Amino acid sequence: MGKVRRHGFVLEWFIGDHDPRHVHVYDTKGRFLGRFDLTRRVGHEGWQPSKKLLKLITELENEGRL
Image (cartoon, rainbow, N blue to C red):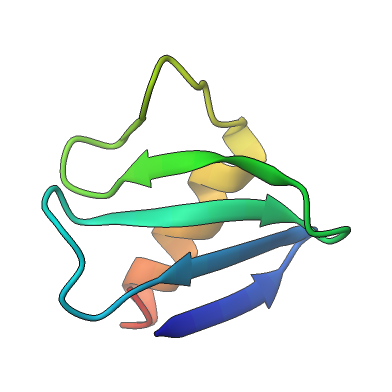
């Protein structure tokens, strides 16, 4: 399992988790916000991620963390 806390979000992912490749997104109080598909760059089940979260995901990908 991987976990990153940054910019008011907590992102978790599980090694060997089902496809599509995604992260579970929580706020800093532990409330589940949604799942984000890293391949298609969209939220699951109609969830719309914020621009702040999209920027964070791009930042983490550029750092090689995701």
